[in-house]
Length: 162
Image (cartoon, rainbow, N blue to C red; front, side, top):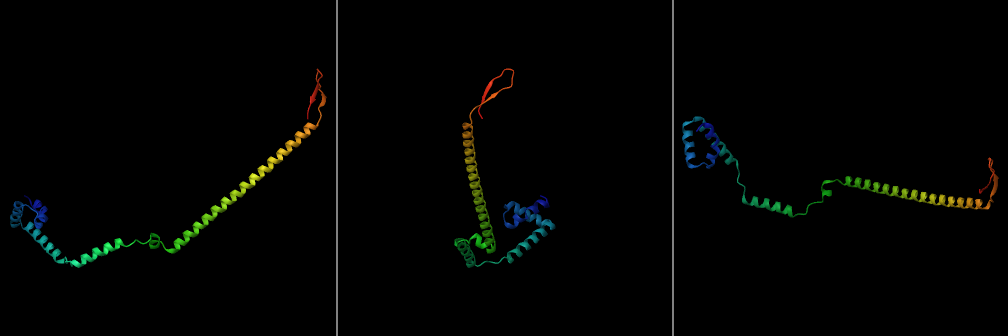
């Protein structure tokens, strides 16, 4: 095998995950190749530093962390509005809502008044038109027919009712 193939297997070798025959080949190669031996040595140093840097967490700390998380989950969540929205935003939103509601009421009230005005005007106009028609019908009925002589070659008498 080539050095690139051995370098690809360094992590598996250090973790003890290589099969016995490949682990033996790796030991032989690092004994012969100074570059791969140096790489394996550097990785070993890094691994020791990492293990030394890791602190062991006391068992009670784990338990306390998990209990704290469980307690937070059981605790009732705060209201979204109280937690995230300042009070002055709520007041401003309430004022805008009341303004819009009162504007809508005023508009609908005005619309109703106009409707009543037009309805009343229509009724008055209808009554006036009915009265005028009745008056004209009465006037037309009271006028007697008039005899008019037509000016034609054939003289006729024509009854015209006004």
